[in-house]
Length: 461
Image 1: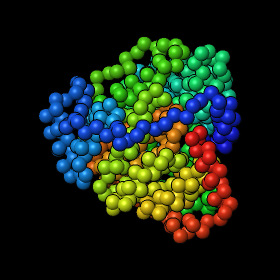
Image 2: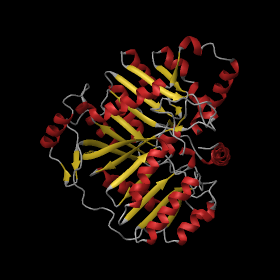
Image 3: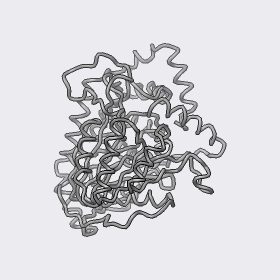
Image 4: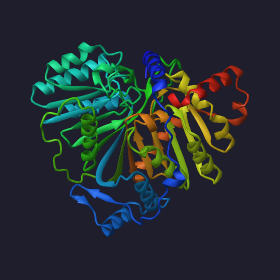
C-alpha cells in the first residue's frame, strides 16, 4: 500500500471511528472441538465417504511429521470448511513472474475472466492488464472486475470507464461515497483479496495487486545484491499461487458471493462452473473470510501453531498480532518448536512497521527467532508449519485482516508443497538479519516511542 493511500485511509478511519465498535477475535480454547474423528474431503463429484477420505489422507500424509489428520479435524471443526482433493498448486514469486502467468492465462481465456483486486493502478502494468482484458471482452470473453474503492482511490475514474465502455462489467467494492450505497455504507470493511479465475478452471491468488509497484522483482533467489535499501527503489518480495482442479470452483464461488453481496447488479449469464476433474494430488482448504463470518483464517492459523510439533516458519508483511497469537507463538517456542518469523526490514508502511516491532521483546524473550528482510519491501503473507501445513493468501497478521476485511487464504496440506515453501523461507532467511534480544533491548529511545505510539492504534491498522 502506497504512502498516499495510507494517508487517505487514515483520514477515512478517523471519520468512522465513532461509528464502529471494536470487534474481538475468537477464543481458541473455546473453538477447539475434538468431537469429530475424521476430516471431510470433497472432490469434483461431491464429498468422499469417511472411509475413503481417511484412506486418501493416510496415503498423502504418510511421511508427514505431525499428526495432520488431527489438525485437519480441528481446523474443519473451527472453520466449517472441508478439504478439497485433486488439485495442482504452483508457487509464484514476486510481481513479474506472477503477472506473466496471469496475463498468459487471461490471453488464453475462452469464456470468462473474473478479477477481484484491492489495487488496480493506472500505470504501465495496470494499463497492460486493462488493455488485455478489453481485448478479451471484445473477442467474446465475459470479463467481470470487482475492485476495492479505497485500494483504488488514486486510480482515475476514466481508467475504469474505459473498460466499462468496452463492455466489461465492473463494481467498486464498498464505495467511499456514502451516497453510492445508501443504507449500507461499510467504509471500514475492505476487499483485500487478490483473485483471478479464468474459464472456471484456473485461479490465481496471494498477495500481489495489479500495479507497477510489483514490476521490480526482489532479489529472491538472485546472487546479486541491491545497491540501496530505500523502499522506493528496491523491489517487492511477494508470493502468489496458481490453482487448477476442483478447488477452483470454491474460489469461483468466493468471487460470485462477494459480487452478490454488493447488490450492484447481476453478473452476465455464463458457465462459471464447468465440470472439474482432478488434475493433481494437492489437498487444500479455501478460507474466504468477511466481517460477518467467524475469523476462519485466524482460527486455522492459531490452531496450526498450537498443534505444531517441529517448526513454525512465518513470513509476514504487516505483523501486528493480538495477544492470543503471541501466546501461541511463545508457547510453541517454549515447548521446543523452531519458531522463526521473517518480518520487514524495509517497509512501505511506517506505523504498522513500528506497531509490529512493539511485540519483539515478548517474543524474543520466549524463544521466538525474528529476522528482518533487508533486500526488498516485504509484502508476502505466507507460512509453513511442520513442513506440511502451508498457507498463502491476502491476510496480514493483524486485526484488520482477521476482523474487518474480505480476505482469502488457501491452506495446502502437503509435504512436497511444504518443501517448496521451506526452500523459499530459507532463501528469505539468507537475505535477512536476525534480531537478538540483547541487541533489541539496546535500541534507540526514539524507536521505543514510535513503537509505543503505534501500538495505541494497533486495532485500526
